[in-house]
Image (tube, rainbow, N blue to C red; front, side):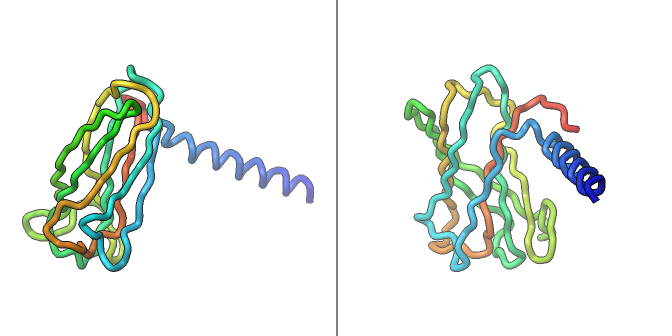
Length: 162
């Protein structure tokens, strides 16, 4: 019995090591769930990301999970990035979620679709420390329905994926 437990534990640990090494370039990957009543125009998704290098280039990706009842083919986002020293950069991003025929872009399961929107690729941050990414919806609806999650992923650029 001890041999079986020990070998099972070794297999589980090896599995965890393999799974965790697949995304070793990921610095940050997190989502905010939007309330069922809709994403209010004044509601903000905030992500705090610790950047450890000014020499390393990073890819910053916006992740959007929308339901099939989302009424638009795109999603305008206002992104504000605040550096550790308080400098602010603001940007407007058009996230295309459906093609011209109305088919959802990205992967999907059931009525939920996931689109990865490249925001900044190969960017080098000016300083190390905690950056704050603040995201609000820029559509005309006061309570935008059909968006399930907004996410932010920061990964080291030029890191080979295994």
